[in-house]
Image 1: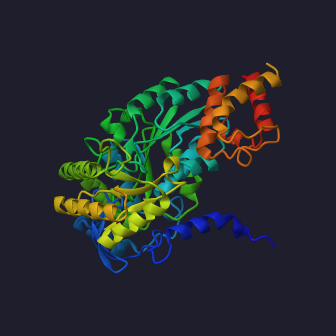
Image 2: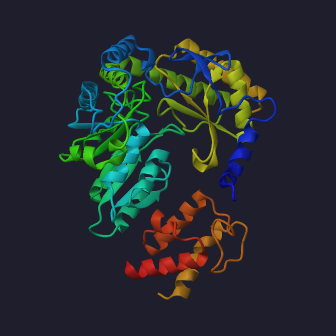
Image 3: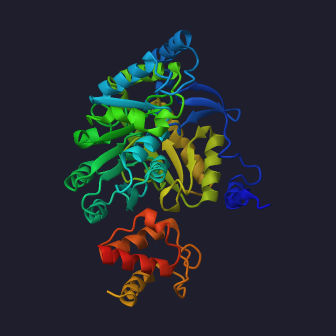
Length: 399
Length: 81
């Protein structure tokens, strides 16, 4: 018998290097208690959370929690069914209405996760003979959506407008084209020049999909994302988003003004062949989305936090993923995985949780300590975080 | 353009990516013999695409494992273009 697991040997070896003698396992952390959007008990220790995507701190919002409890009481624990059979409740229609209000768009379709939203929309919209032109640093869910569908897949260098244009121009006459971009790229926290890229895509006759998972609620005058911020949202055919970041629960969605959009509810397999979100989840999401429409003060504070952390870490001598703070993600570049894991552990012992990100999720084989800020982090917490980075960085020889 | 001329142009393009100076034959594999990782593949493919003004989609790349297969694919793509 051939052991099919032998293909994982390299991954097993890598895992061993990051949890060498006496180390805490970066991929086995357990949150024993969650105290607030910014604090938890991790591995028995009180810890500031700086790696949760809980950008707007909605997970413990009292209105959001009340809406969830009420739905749990009135509609039960789950739907036990697909959206197209018995799984569409009043709450599912209501959260889709909330998304239409939030984005000022005609249609919204909710999926059980953000991953499934990309998987479903990309694999269904682009078919055999069509071309998908996408950024090489796209999220795994975008790549998996490409792999699941039948279109030709053509990547281009990260944020390279000219490389994208060249590829679009070489696509055979008559073929359908879908350009797939992200507002914020989650590994380095950098944003895309969407205005120029979308103008080029449009000029070449392509439809445009933008994943705004890491910008919703935070970037843009109404929190609609990078495309809104750059004034080109009306030229986006499909916006993909998630409830598991700023919205504070779980689920994914696509919003669009395409007149035939509703047919996707029948054509899109990751929408049809899975159970719908529980009533409590869609109730919390709808309440959270409507509150995010009026969260200008929180957005301003989150930007203050992002600027403060970015500026201070840079001044301490850390290498960062972006020259200026572009989003709520600040990526600290580590020299290699081993020292990255040591720094991660030193921070955890200080009482700080960040994400340890490594290849293949990261671009150019980098090891990153990825920090994502929350609007509920106080200025005092940000100062404590900076002190922890300074001590851990010196102890591990990173700075 | 015949196969030899196409191969010569691709051979010029591969030089900066062939860091170990491996001797290339039709049977040389990119992942094995040339030790290309995914980023190197992207840059090398982009260089070929720009040189010949063609698209080699990832679907087509999946069928290309050896140098000989790459040359054949480029010959075919330039003739249909």
